[in-house]
Image (cartoon, rainbow, N blue to C red; front, side, top):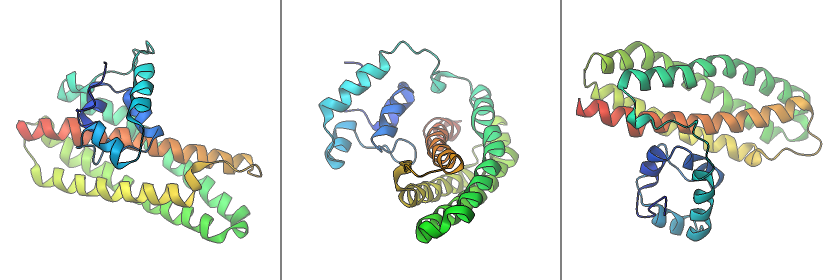
Length: 221
């Protein structure tokens, strides 16, 4: 058995990064939460544990060795990875998604005003939160961690912001109807839904590395 179902979901995600693909498919929280054992989480979510374990077995046996265990990296390596893999792409992707969200709302908003307005307003709130969040991490928190300072107050605030962001992402998914692309969707509408879902997946991985790898390590420093 590759994964012990008695392990917390977040711990499995740390030890087996590819497991996050399975968790994302089934809506299992491995970033802000994930403290409960996998077996208990499946009961709470009415998921078939045996089926989930089979999916994990396939995913983790795929031979894909591109997913590094970042809990085994040095702190400077981990921070550099967070910035290059998540912060820098976000600064490019967020304006692109805003452009598409505004265009889709303008062109198709009359088809379902509640849905399209909800997508746009929630996305703009997410964009504002993330933009401010990245600056605080890069200008305050990361330098403190690299200097060996246990900046507990800033980490707590960052984690509260992670919780808020998780709630916004759940609202966005709800407005976007689980990102299912309708048949009548134009290329921009389709691209927006695909981009928003990938934003959700990447943000979950991003938050997981900070909440469950970087911050616990910094608190022990």
